[in-house]
Amino acid sequence: MFFVSSTYIQLKSPLYIPLVMFYLLRTALQVERASGKLNIRYRYMDRKYWTLSLWQDEASMKAYRNQGVHRQVMPKLSKWSSEAGFVNWYQESAKLPDWQIVEKRMQETGRRQQFGHFAG
Image 1 (cartoon, one colour):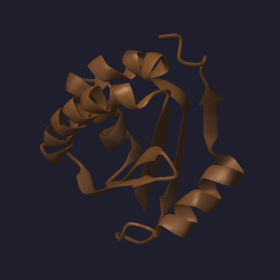
Image 2 (tube, rainbow, N blue to C red):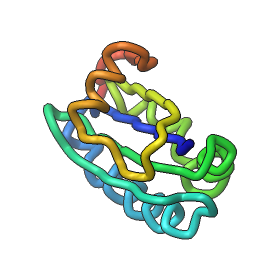
Image 3 (tube, rainbow, N blue to C red):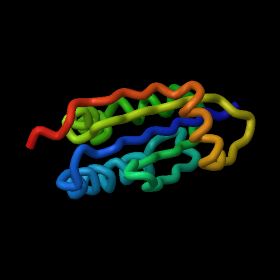
Image 4 (cartoon, rainbow, N blue to C red):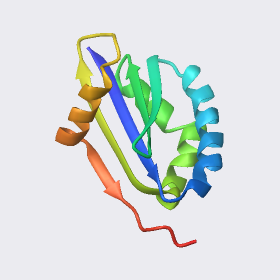
């Protein structure tokens, strides 16, 4: 079995795009070196930045998530985002699922949180 994780953030303002891109590039470098990472995809759709990653197991994903740049940026997301969400599951295939499956999983079992509006 393989562990799938997908996240998204929706920014409060386009003013945060440069910051998000800066951290996205740094976390992308971190994830490429992460032990247990099998594959990853990114997309921007409907004003949301999405990640989709495939791991050997949940422990590998959590080890990546809880250290380095990724850990540094997580507390900032509530300031920059109006909404964020994640969904995780196990699957038998070692291939990343289609985005339609990810969206369905996010609707059915994902955890989403809304944050305050942009205050300047």
